[in-house]
Image 1 (cartoon, one colour):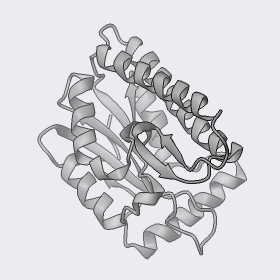
Image 2: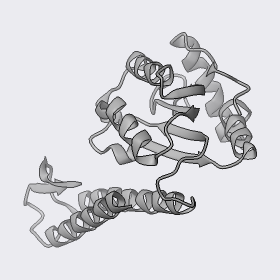
Image 3: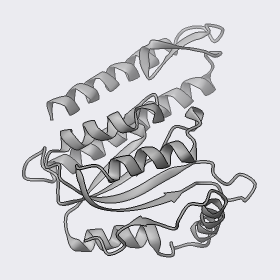
Length: 222
């Protein structure tokens, strides 16, 4: 929890810095993006301010959700037997399917994981743009029992996925077998809504194009 508080406080400082910097003239071309040591070369307009600030707000919300997830356990650093994890690389990193496949399979076949179910997805709704928004979902039965240990392993494995790994890695506890089955249905079953169902068809095209299986691992996990 101390690590979480440090990250949250630092994020708040970045947000205050950004609000202060909005009072500079629009022609000022140096502004901090997420990290005060990182300089973006872009016109400092109202549109850019909104974009940067919304990104920070999204990260703040994600940290709050993470804290709620931690506090839902009797111990803030204890994992449940099964975890549902999403890895969503930052688009500008241009992570390849092969890179994500190799890194993920190496992780899931390591000694720290005793069972898993993995699917590859993408976010595009058109055939021409299939593969955009590449990401993976997986359920694991982890030998780690501490949240910080699993998080450290994921951050090490997917270090190249994003400038800000908090936005690329999402970890959810599966507290009951019902939770595991719900996650499996989300990964493998037909999603609700015509828009999501159409995206699933593009997912199938994407997998065929890259010779990716519909799923990897144990379909009966849990």
